[in-house]
Structure formats: structure tokens, C-alpha cells
Image (cartoon, rainbow, N blue to C red; front, side, top):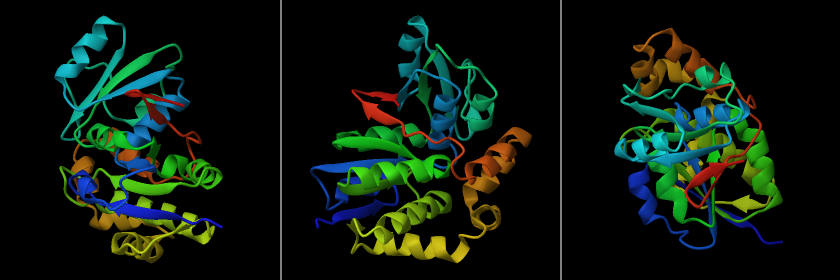
Length: 241
């Protein structure tokens, strides 16, 4: 039986140094909040999402009738119709709409991983269906965490640890990488209450808490598993399901 390899890049800055370079899947992760919000937007009915790494790239899509969703530093960008809130998206009816989307970390992460044969979006909100997809179509895997401005983040690493544990336990995946085993160990440390652990220790949680009740709701939602059971994938620069 062939066993696929797993590698974990803890930030986008480390992605180019990965050892798995060809014939692989990349899972882009930004638990707080981009990949969670992307899954929520698709659950709310959005038809497609175009991830962008600059705000300047949004304007041409406005002219084509796309909703503009943008965030910088955790705050909604002035002039955009939407920010980066999964709970906001779930309260909307997005059927029939398309979205152009730019965030501080998450969309940069997705685009960085676009050289893979498959680029998927991952978070706690879709962890079970994502695991199923990766087990149905095993391939060498790079999990790419967005972190915060190329620095390590606890919440993304916890998700990576949870996903790696599930995949390795299946027997279809294995890893010799220190980052993978570190992430699994961190997950095992606080798997009974990852939300509580991050409330206490994660810097981005503390940053978002200062933005009010909407952001606080987003934090709690982001640690709930399987709330948006779908797997967005990147195809020719566009996220679809």
C-alpha cells in the first residue's frame, strides 16, 4: 500500500522551503478567519470567490458585479460590501452572487499554495469532509498555515495538528517532519477545549476580541467542527465547491 507524505508549513514564508515540491495537494488554512469565512460564504450560497492579495485588485470585479469583501488588520475595509466574518456571511443569502475577496493573511496563503495540483481550503468548520476527501484521493500533502503576517499562529497550527492526526491514524498518510509532530502534540494537549486554549494564549484571538461582539462570535464559531461541510478548491484562480 502506498502511503502519502504530509508536510506542514507553519507560515507562507516557509512554503518555498518545503521538501514536497511536485505532485501534491496543498490545504490552505486561516482559521481566524479567512478559510472559515470562505466555507461559510459557500454554505450561504455564494457561487464563486476570487481570492486576491491586494485591495487594488478588487475594483475590476466590482465593475463585473461581484461583491467585494475585504479586511486588513482584522477590520473591514471601507468601501467593501463585506468584511471577513463567517457569522456575517451565514446570516446573508448569497445565492446568485460572486465575490472578490482580499484579506491580510488568508488570501495570500491560498494564492501562495496555488502551484499545487490541488489547492483546497481547510478549517475546523469543514474538517471531517476535508479529511474524507483527502482519504478518498490520497496524495502527498502540504498543509499551509497563514499565521499572522508570516509569523506562527496557534489556531492554524492546532487545526493542522487535528487534521494530521486524523490522516495519519488512517494509515494512508505518514510524516517524518518535526512541524507535523509538534502540531499533533499541541492538538493533543488541548483537543478537549481548543477554543479555551486559544482564548488564553493565541495573540490573534486577543487582537480580534478588541473589535467587538461580531468578532467575538466569529472566534467561537471558528472552533466549532463541521458547521460548513464542504470543501472549496482553487481552479484557475477562482474558489469553487
